[in-house]
Image 1 (cartoon, helix red, strand yellow):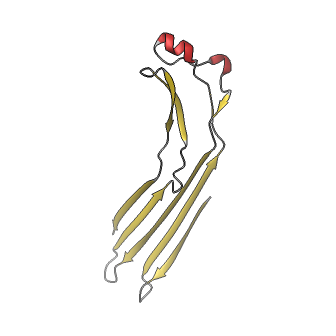
Image 2: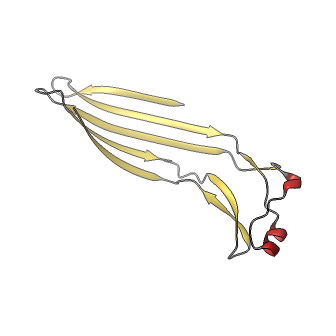
Image 3: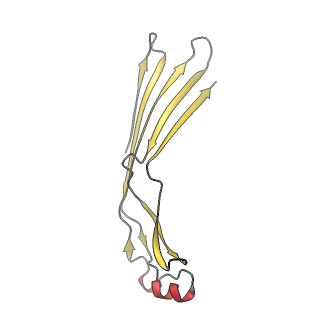
Length: 125
């Protein structure tokens, strides 16, 4: 789901305040589990192909929010834009993959990006 709204602000209603949000959710991806014993003996990851795509990661969930201001010049075709983008507001730990770790002899989960604030400035002419 994606939604956004712009509000005209300022004395002459020339400037704009923006608010955007994006909500993403999906069922967990299916994957082939690692054969832990075979991987330990071989020293590298070996998948359990007899059980291909039999396991499923937890469902994916991410909520992003962005708000900002666009300042439009009165004399030129020029605007300054300032945005603050907060990605994964809830800091949900979404699994990207499960991989065999040769050093620990275990299967470790690798996660996608967690809570991530970002600031952006754009000069448009």
